[in-house]
Structures are given as structure tokens and as C-alpha cells.
Image (tube, rainbow, N blue to C red; front, side):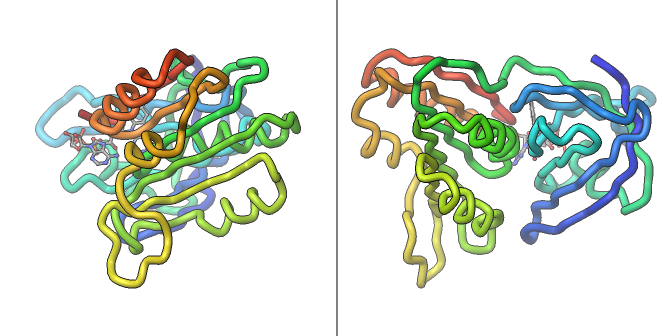
Length: 235
Ligand SMILES: Cc1cc2nc3c(=O)[nH]c(=O)nc-3n(C[C@H](O)[C@H](O)[C@H](O)COP(=O)(O)OP(=O)(O)OC[C@H]3O[C@@H](n4cnc5c(N)ncnc54)[C@H](O)[C@@H]3O)c2cc1C
């Protein structure tokens, strides 16, 4: 793991509580990572002399080495997310990385199933971008769950990726849609249970809260054996 200093080059509010933060690397000026890995920030905690460490997945493609993109939601009173939400464009920060065993494997010919809840999309976006430039023909499916319409982001990007790559399919599900939603509703677990009939040719990547990870893993295990890689953000 290396220590990096970086400048906040772009901040984009994606929803009422989700922010994308682009960090341009200063020293060292480039990073090499595997799609799915994370970086860690040391953040101050009120009343404590020792800082806390908080990991954040890299959401950008590993092909882009001079900057990284983070996407995170504000947890009220949370030291990590409050620190990152407090950064302003032009400010400097530092982090360590890359780290983590949740990265896109070379699973031969297996079709890929990615399942995320909330900002669990971050490492999966990096993996999907990396996989789609590989240009092989296996199918890549993303099932992403958020709560309601106001929590949606990156929908145009997913539509454009699907238009450019016939082997890519994505569905975004709302667990608590407001009236007027024409898309899929319910939990990602239900989608996987209903739509995935066989796992024998699948490799699966799950990222988000522990409840989703546990339930989707159980549902898939009931259908058979396949590699399942998991990144748990919180309990
Ligand atoms: C390997 C790894 C990668 C991660 N990558 C990301 C990422 O890319 N984007 C991101 O938003 N978070 C990510 N997280 C979660 C992140 O590290 C922090 O836990 C989160 O930002 C909350 O930290 P905090 O210090 O603000 O609040 P804390 O005081 O540490 O957390 C307060 C409570 O919030 C809950 N919580 C934690 N994360 C979330 C969340 N995302 N949504 C809702 N509730 C939550 C926890 O249950 C916790 O009890 C990742 C976690 C891990 C382990």
C-alpha cells in the first residue's frame, strides 16, 4: 500500500445525500489498482487524539491512473463521510491504497452478475467499466437497488453502456418507489431469486449492506455452486 496526496478536482452532488468526489493524484502522480479495490482515509474523530481509518471503493476505471473517483453517502454524524463531504474543490487530502481482495477476477468464460445496494455500486462501476473494455462476449448483468426516485443516479451512463455493449444489461430497482415509477420495484434479492435460474456459468460480485449480501448469497447457494465475491460496507 502506498500513501498518496491528491487534490479534490471535482465534486458532484448526485442525489440529496450521495456525492461523487474526484481526486487528482499529486504525489505519486498515478495509481495502479485492480477494479474493485479501495483506498483508506485517516479521519479525525471529535474528542479522540487518534484518527480513525475509513475505506472507500474506487468507482473509476483502473485504466484512468492519474485520478480516482469516489462515491459516498453522508452518514449523519459519521466521521468518515463527514470528513469527505467537508472537502472543497482545490483542497488537498491524503489516503493509502490500493487494498482489498474484492476485485474483478479472470473467471474464464463465466458470465458476470453484479449486485449492489446504494453506494455499493462504486466498486462494481469500476469492474463493469474494466470488463466492458476487455471486449469479450460474456454477459454482464448489474442489479442495483436504491430506495426511491430521489436516490437515482448514473442512470444515463448505464443506458449508454447498454446501448454500446449488447452483452451488458442493467436494472435499477426501487424498494420504496414514489407513485409514477414505471421500472422494477422491490428488493434486489427478489430479482435474483426470480430471474437467475442457473448459477453454473456465473461469477457473482455483491457489494452493499450485510443484509443484502447474506440474502443474495443464500438465494444463490440454493441454486447451486458458483464463485461469489463480497464486499460488506456495513452491518
Ligand atoms: C471495503 C469498504 C469499502 C467501502 N466503500 C464505500 C464507498 O465507496 N462508499 C460509501 O458510501 N461507503 C463505503 N464504505 C463505508 C465507509 O467506509 C464508511 O463506513 C461509511 O462512510 C460510514 O463511515 P462514517 O465514519 O461516516 O460513519 P460511522 O460512524 O462509521 O457509521 C455510522 C453507521 O452508519 C452505517 N453505515 C456505514 N456505511 C453506510 C452507508 N454507505 N450507508 C448507510 N449506512 C452506512 C453503519 O452501520 C454505521 O453503524 C466502505 C466500507 C468498506 C468496508
